[in-house]
Length: 353
Image: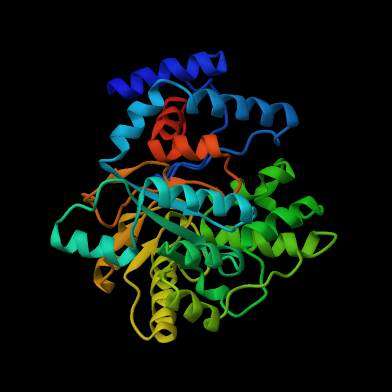
């Protein structure tokens, strides 16, 4: 363990009042390593729990380790992984923080540096969005345009031009409405999505059909991006990448399904954009060797994980680039410690993946 991580272990022990190791049997975020199922989520957040997390965030932000990690982060790439934008004001504040303290870079700049084997500038940050939530267009794009921050959006092609909900949002709603499925027996509603992600993909799809057939009500429709929206995003500096056709966990798919998921999304994006995409984000962060091989065949230059880590300014494995998990409602203190690397270090020490 490095000296900063050792010091971070001591800091989190002081901040939380408990040793900085994961308690036996505790729930943790789903690992991105193929073959290892994610743990079910813990209890729903409570006001007391939220206050405790804010206290810990504040202690970490004002820890003497924060300047140390901040200095180290100048020599690392921070790829921020967002989904939708639930807090537009919070997102704007985060982006304003980036332009003051970091060097926002584009997907194309990263790809060029990788091709030329040339490191990115110090404090480089790439902003990315997974899934293609419509709020990226309505809430994110005005901020990115105003601040001249480039970004990338990885879209689920099956949803483009539809009003279908994301499958995980639909499953959570259906389970809360009393929906049941064989593989979910004994699973509380709030654990349904995590359980579904552990299943072979064919079983996951069958379970979704069972949930729809047994729930008291169907999930509300959700406006998705359409092809015109993709063009507007690209014109404004948000590059479009592949996030598969239906967003399965690829390591849970049969060989033919995994290939079809990547290839069909690639075909559609090539048609819609007028050129093939060259960047891919693994759904749920779950990578596997089959997908990496196919990405190479199709000419992809960049692939992104979801593992809450920085990467090198010249990533050593361009198809396995680390990303940092962040939301628009992430507190300013936590946002700062995510950018510095202190929060990811504490996350790993406490058993996160």
